[in-house]
Length: 328
Ligand code: CP
Image (tube, rainbow, N blue to C red; front, side, top):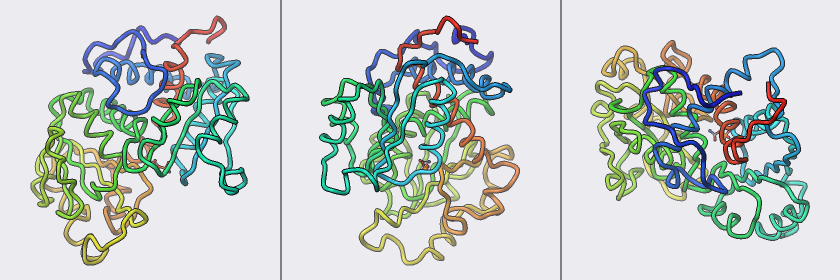
């Protein structure tokens, strides 16, 4: 398994030779070269997933704990598959049957897990900054699998991988991100990554769901969906996160779909080969019509498939990117 001969035509800046971080807490800590390294490494990881025996011994002897305090289908499953493909020993803590329900704190939970000497902890938590807190207390590498409304770095990395796979570059592409911007950790990580890599990023949603300071991150903001979609290379829809809303941010879901929902008619303004993306889970008929989600330009399931390769790359690189002698 070599990471030295990346696929030709990746259209990315020169990759660094290693990830020089103990943890992956957010995209904000990664340079453009480190992002390129993860994406290039994921190419090799994706090839492993296409073999009849989808396993290499790169993380043999390493123990990875998956600690998910919030529900997850895609992230948790793909981390588990990625860990197994790299031959790590993995365990996933079922929070509902752990001592968290008896009132044990995050720090105490992590300290007790650390006493058993794992190498990495993959954490999803409802509190923004939970991963940073754990990083201060833990010797293990901490990987952020989504913290509150803060960051979801591996989602942004797999989104970038999916775009590069189809368009061979990120720089200069118009990427329109439409939906619940205010509550989205996916938005924040994507903005940080895409602007760092030279994309032209537009964000769009109801005025009540646009963070007031979002343009300081180098993106253009609008509530006019036609403006965001016009000539877009990529349209990424974000879920309306009703579970994080305490008040009414728009009159009704039906009205939201009428004004912001992505339909084939609206997409006529985008480039003919526009990529349709959604991190999932989708609210069909709210932020996206089924005809778009399931249409020929949708790469939503590619995103899910690429999640495994990108998370393998992150695990491998954080472990030091050390090639095991017996690696295939
Ligand atoms: N995209 C994403 O984070 O999905 P899950 O919540 O299912 O992990």
